[in-house]
Structures are given as C-alpha cells and as structure tokens.
Length: 122
Image (cartoon, rainbow, N blue to C red; front, top):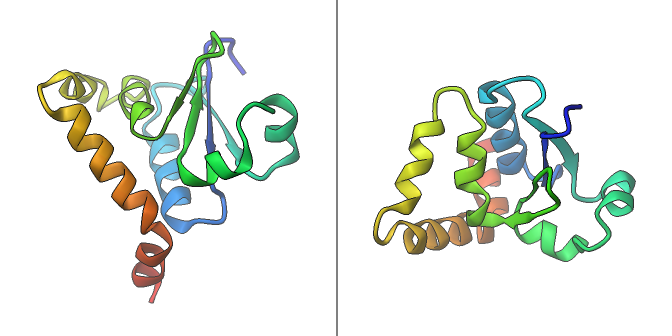
C-alpha cells in the first residue's frame, strides 16, 4: 500500500456502508488511493486505538497519510478528491451552506442506515 493511501474505516455489517465502500473502490483514482478496514476488525483496533468502536459505528472514518482523522461528513470531500471522476465535486463542499447540508444529510442517513438497508433488501 502506498504511503499516501487513506484508510477508510467502515461498518462492514451494514449493507449501505458496504455499498458505499464498493462505490469508493470502483471509483478510486488508483489502486493505492484507499485501504479499507472494517470497524470491528482486530487490525483496526490495533492500528487505530484512538478510534473507538462506538464512534466508527456511527460514522465512517478516513485516516490520511499524515495521521489526520476525518469522520462522517468531514471525510466526504477528501473521499471525492481521491476518485477519478468525482474529484471536482469535492469543491462543492466549499459553497455556502454545503457543510451544514452535508452534515445534516450524512447524519440522517447514518442514523437510519439499518432501516434503509432492510428496505432496500426486502
């Protein structure tokens, strides 16, 4: 894995989260753009002990090469920057009101992700 790879920590038991990771994997700028770790894995606990299980079950976490940790909606622009097709969309997060809107939408989806998953799979 490249030194600049960002580590995306996600809830592997959630179909919505797995779908999001699959989307990121398919759209990543290159094979070394991301590393993916399930929240409840031993490797995640060993490598990132400061990210508690409760926190990573509430929101995805993106750990950058310099050690910075971005959680939930704060990770979205950086995830987009590391894709082939959607990197320009990251600039939308700097528009007035975009941060507030993305925070609201991310939290609403995260809060109801298991219900969303059940409805999508039924």
